[in-house]
Length: 268
Length: 308
Image (cartoon, rainbow over all chains, first blue to last red; front, side):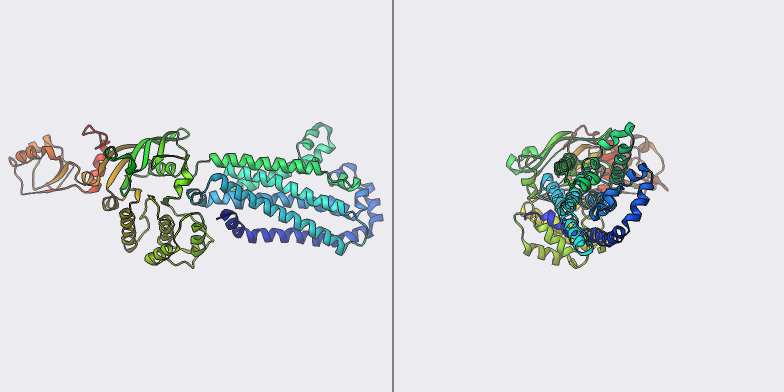
């Protein structure tokens, strides 16, 4: 039957996915009500920010111009959390879809059935991409709705849409990377640890690289360099081409994962 | 090799010179055998001898370094998907989805096959008395095995591969399982099974292959295997004598001495025995275990042939 593995995995991972949706939506609804309060006391805050060391401001994505906009407050600090959460989600999802199958040895059952390895991998990847798309869509929808509900000042919907697109490309990138690591290591704990290590390295590497010329390369190898939140907010520009490119790199990781999966000996 | 005498169309599974290394560690070095339709072939050997590796290569779970596998003349893995519709596999260790209910699992399993009889599935569940409401993780080892048996047989395969099939089965379930295997064999299904339970091998097989350190050292019919050219002769109340020097006993305790004698040497042995003092003598066929150990320890090459 069509998409048998997809449907089975979707059923298996539904509660996991719903919990993560609740985490993302809950984060939006807990973070946004603070925005009005921060903006009401913006004058004092700007004075305080201007007195802070520049390096510290850069490290924490704090700019007076950014902080004077509601989408800036959400985008600079809130999105940092969202990025880290998204990598954790993607690593866990890849673990649940790929590594767990190896750990519980159910992969043996699956591959003994009359189904190609490419079909198994394709259906699992399709499930991951579907869940990633739904999560990105829900995030964007609730972000826009949350702004409508809680924010009583002018804001740019384009910037909010950019956050949704960035979330999608980060999820695809880390989803692909984690799938590749899952197929290599066949262990979910190892996969999650490595994936989280990479996002921490990329996120803080980008911040450090931006502030120290000597290690600028750290910025260049991070995906976050190419989807800069501050520039998006200040210039009201969506870095769509970069987001597409990052998503494509994520898809390449899926392809690399398939190459490993296709050649793997099962039950050695 | 007995398959030599069969026409090519009778051969269901053909395994040629399989070789597999796990890095530097040898999995199997040379395994060749054929199984014809309606034949039950027992692959025997202790743990780590290469039985499971051979099975996994046939199923496409492992890739062979050398050698070929054909099913009905079609080379695997090129035709593996087509042929998997006609294969059933019962793993030694049953690992299905722990949180899935048995009923849901069977529904999932049925979606993989082109031809599938739900009526036969119901029959098997009733025959094996399987509780379908429980989750897989809640099942006992025996019940897990029942699920394994059903998913292996339910699509009525032409080639059935069983890895240590009766491990964890109680005697009643074993009886039912043997009955099912018998029916499959009558239907014309070729069956390959691995075991170190020689009673089971004797009960199920037409032919056996003995695997040692990754090499299939001997193949024989089950009758040849059971009556393997030797007799066990137990002599009671006999003191050490000339006979001991000519025929080394395999066991000696309280003047009861056990010899393992080739059929061709029995006459000479008995005539020498009659010149000695003893109270009683008992001659019997060796058990399968004794035959296997004899073959295994001597590598099966003491009669000069690799395959009977």
